[in-house]
Length: 211
Image (cartoon, rainbow, N blue to C red; front, side, top):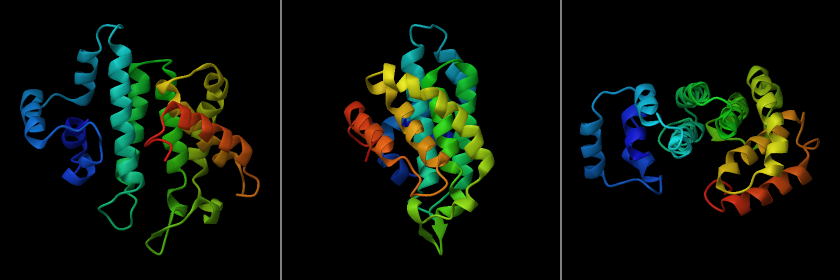
């Protein structure tokens, strides 16, 4: 993950340090030399030639994409603390992953999740400060992104009921984002359903996804 963050998005040392499984800088540098100048798409295809290895590879790819999105969604090194360029790059890579691995539920869920979260970008910062969702002006939410994300998230509700284990975490988060995206106000949000989904998320992966 550290390799991908540094190579493809020029993430800083501080951003990479927040990834629990990152290797030390010297080991990462050695891997960078071996990786050379291969593109992300070509490398992904070459490493996923056999269906047996595909689930392991795609999980890693999705994790890196979501880390990239989160660095843009809440940047720790810029003012204001939102980097639209990183968020849009992550969404583009998520769509690419969906094209490469069709009918992969978690990949589809990730794109839906990022679209729904990114839709709130214009309302999330006021005067240089982050605005809690309940205080956001929802008229500033980008309806095109909400509409694009909702169909994918709606499709995932029955999947969440059937699936269990670590691979369901993105589906759960997409479902939570969809409930927020559907509501016209904080008061009209289905909070009991959101609380139930968070309970499921805590069972699937206690930290850091549900924190």
